[in-house]
Amino acid sequence: MTEAPGLDAYARKYLAEAREALAEPYLLEAAHRIVPLLVRARSAGRTVFFFGNGGSASTASHFVTDITKVAARGPGRRTRCVSLNDNVPGMTALANDLDYAHVFAEQLKVLAEPGDVAVAISGSGNSPNVLEAVRVARTLGVATIGLTGMGGGKLKELVDVAVVVPSNSMQHTEDSHVVLLHLLTAYLRDEGPTSER
Image (cartoon, rainbow, N blue to C red):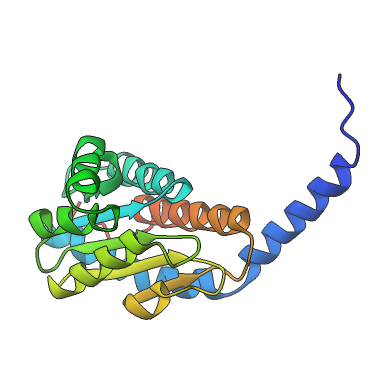
């Protein structure tokens, strides 16, 4: 086995910082504000859109997979979800013909309707294409949720519900986003209102 000098100390430090980022009350406060939006969208048959870049794009795709599968037990209404970053041909066409800043906003202009929900994910809170999509969503009557960190950037001021991880580490920010999304998925599956299922 290859030696890994300092790994034990590094791992302990990383995990301690991750626990610290998760220990703040912001996650529970965010869940209390987000769950009603998701339940209302499910009950009304509205669509929840997720989008982000890089690691945040994979988080968007991950949550759409989880919420449509895991949180959809029973015979009743399911949550309609779309990950805008999964439409790779559409994104490349928009980036090529317009600008990368419009790859999510232009999709929302076609797909979104009042009463839908947009979940914007940006570790820095300053991704131009995420910010543009949130601006468009608001003009369309779409409720907006922002998952961010590093102080929240511009995103925290644009959304209806801002979840700002208290960390300047992209890794801990993304770790916390995944924990929150798993918490929401599990709650909607196990404890959420069942009358419409």
